[in-house]
Image 1 (cartoon, rainbow, N blue to C red):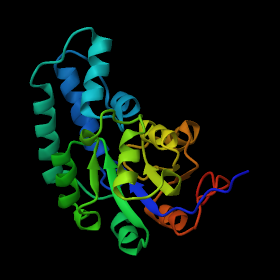
Image 2 (image 1 turned 180 degrees about the vertical axis):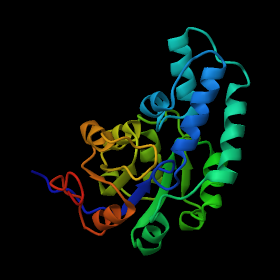
Image 3 (image 1 turned 60 degrees about the vertical axis):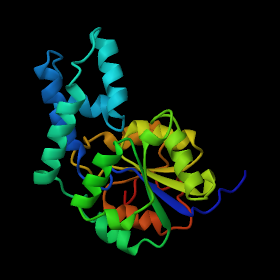
Length: 234
């Protein structure tokens, strides 16, 4: 069996990994979808749409509903999410300390639009840890679960895919990392993660799941992320 190379680059998803934003965005998505006549709960949004771009979510809803969403739907939703960012958004507990101690190269690869991505990282004080290596799915043809964004990020950072480790909280993101030929760490420290979320990430292809920034830090200090550590600390 070919031995996997040690990782050289950590590719972080943003929402639910660096910033605790999925609870805010999912709540607003559910409220706005319900308001226009497509009844949806917060938990439904978390399960169906976490990790996907707003364009992908829109396409899925329209196909299921059989009609187009209002032309101003995205504008209304994004405006509300940005407003909630300014009043409620917090970084994931312990992530700032992890980034201060991390010696490996790092970047962000997120499904969020560039302006929302930067806003969230700046408001939580995390932009400084990544600037200018912050990549949005707007830069590639196909978003997660396609591997395009992770492969784009690795190329921009001049690191081979097999030397990258991805940190992801969503099934779509895990599948994208696996499809890119990267090691994937599932991460369940976000407020949106349900009790069985870690197992769902493992089933999607994550090598291991970290339940906190502290557990994640321990994994990233290893030269390799080994499949035997299925649930960090467990």
